[in-house]
Amino acid sequence: MTAYKHISVKPLAGSLGAEISGVDLRQIGDETFDEIRKAWLDHLVVFFRDQKLTPDQQIAFCKRFGEIHHHPFVKGMDDYPDILEIIKEETDTRAFGSTWHTDQMFNPKPAKATILFAKETPDAGGDTMFTNQYMAYETLSDGMKAMIDNVKTWNVGSRKKLSASDGMGSVSDGRYKGNDKMASKIRDPGDLVTEAAHPLVRTHPETGRKALYIGNHSVGLHGFADKEARPLLDYLMTHSVQPEMSCRFRWEVGSMAIWDNRCTMHRALNDYPGKRRRMHRITICGDAPF
Ligand code: SIN
Image (cartoon, rainbow, N blue to C red):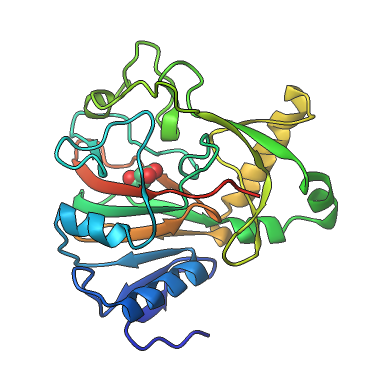
């Protein structure tokens, strides 16, 4: 059990997640940041309440985790290109990121961390769920582990041109059907690579632990026929999202979550029709998984 000097850390669920209190993220020193980083590596996703950062302060805080990564398909804010504003309006039916995924898995070097900051929240609904992908791997049978240990997945950001990115579903007319605001932010990724092979079992570069690396962008397995790969991917997804391997966070204005994309999946719950939700998301560049 880690002892902290500058922060309080309270686990949220048995499998992952912890709420950190006693800290104002606008003004933290290096020792406090080191403790937050340690708690993040230990708990996989950490949450803060009542934070009051401006966009510039959020960007400055996020840069302590590494270089900011830009989404290949979705534009950042006009004034703050580093921030992707996720909005669901009262009239929208689609929510961004509403299927289980890990961010930017279609990138050869997927994002290592995501920092999400709540600006407007519905009075109920719009929670985000997370899974522990170390646990997902560790609880597989020895037989399954032996079969998948050296298998690679194929991960696609856009099954049709500009579609299916980050769990929005497919788009036939070049727009995110059911969410016009997000549709208006779509950009052509140009020369950026948005398909990638990754190990199905990856080793976390900082903790050394093995995690099942899978998500809604995974469409195939190298060396497997589609009719073999799909049921296996479906099984591994179902296995990963058991309630005992997950946690659920209820947002309020000023809440912030920081998750580790190398060992978690997440999904935004789309259960607040007629209500508005607005979040500021920043992703941090990662390395090629191994
Ligand atoms: C995301 O997938 O990054 C968005 C999650 C959320 O809005 O809760």
